[in-house]
Length: 111
Image 1 (spheres, rainbow, N blue to C red):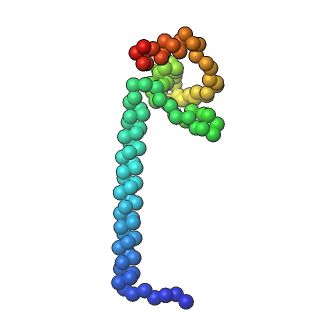
Image 2 (cartoon, rainbow, N blue to C red; image 1 turned 90 degrees about the horizontal axis):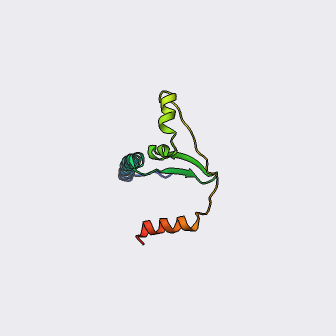
Image 3 (cartoon, helix red, strand yellow; image 1 turned 90 degrees about the vertical axis):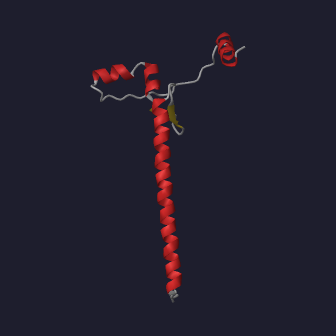
């Protein structure tokens, strides 16, 4: 048997639902703004950035600076009239020779 609620209880529940909807919309707006900010930073970074899908180690996206580092971006846009895309796959890690790693460490840490 269903329970009958009073008008006040129903009014209270409606207000709770309206508040929940308001909070969800506010959260969605904040998330969209955050995503726009992230995308702006990612796209305009002066260093190469990329995102990797961990399950199969595939690059999901890379910013223009990363593409320029590989030299593909300008040439590809030129020959495809701006419509071309490309992808890069991770191959392997290799140890940096000790003399080179020492130079890198010295440069980074000022030693």
